[in-house]
Image (cartoon, rainbow, N blue to C red; front, side, top):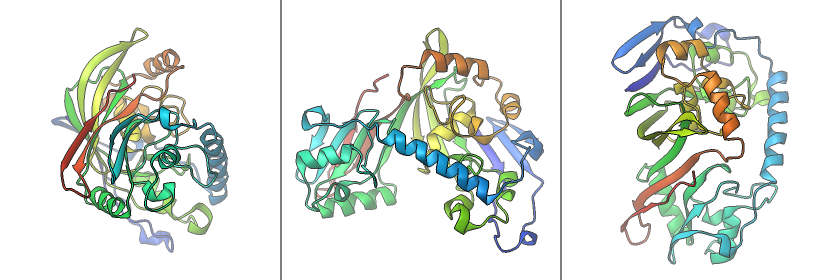
Amino acid sequence: MRICAGFTLFAVSLSSAAAFVPTARVGTSWGSTSCVTSSTSLQSTIEATSGADIKAKYEAAMEKLKAKDKSSAALTKEDLKIVFEDDHIVVVDKPSGVLSVSGKDDNPSLAGAVFEAYGCEGGSADKMVVHRLGMDTSGLIVFARTMAALRGMNSAFRTRKVTRTYEALVCGHVEQDSGVIDMPLMRDYENPPYMRVSTDEHQRALIGLDADEVGKKLLEGPKDSLTKYTVVAREELGGHSVSRVALTSISGRTHQLNVHCAAFGHPIVADSVYGVNGDATSNGGLDEAAIQESNPSRASGELQQQIADAASDKSMCVHAKSISFEHPATGEKLSFESSSPF
């Protein structure tokens, strides 16, 4: 199955609204069938957006995120689950509830704990950071101990020579055993700083906004985004249908897996941002009726709420399960895997 939001992409002109010529086509393809609908089938009621409103929402959301970051757990060397370690790199199995990096507020982080335990040539935790996982995401993460290893791993990620697979529990039973979710992403101007599926209509809403007021990232054009999924098992949680899926992010966009799963109609279990009643726009920014029409097997809003209630004591159910890459110093092909905690 291939889930494709065939929205025409365009660049927003900030200098002249007249420079924009809208498209009338919005196509959504599910599997071998194609459904072409008008743009009103997607989140169509676009209210007037002001830079001041966006800025206020952004600042409020950032304050909430900062407060959450302060709850990051402090780890000792004994707490670290080391999967691999040598003079060049350290591979760690990160628990949920811990920041990958400390940030400006110097909160407790995995990078800080790894630096204290193993040190690095660069002399600071920041010089070890190769990639990151979200605070609520558990799983495998690589740190560099030398500057050469840092450069080598950065190059491997940049050139997409690192293969990573995530495991997640999602709401409902995913009907097809495997497929591809192909939906462009954009910043969510209605709920910044989060992400949403991009449509012409929502790109139009950005016209006339001032980058100095709302930030350049909000005004960036749509980003092509591709996620592969495979159903590992169809299970139950608290008597409610869930699916265990393997997810591979081909394009690696911010919050891509979360948004794609939500827009697919099967949000990640215990996702407090992109799941039911989350902080971001629901359904990845798509209209619920349109998703239901295109994907009748999607998890209903009622089911999503039931699962949210059953999983109220759980961390978000997404885990960086496997990672493969060439050792930055020896060139040896390395592969690591860890079991998900859910």
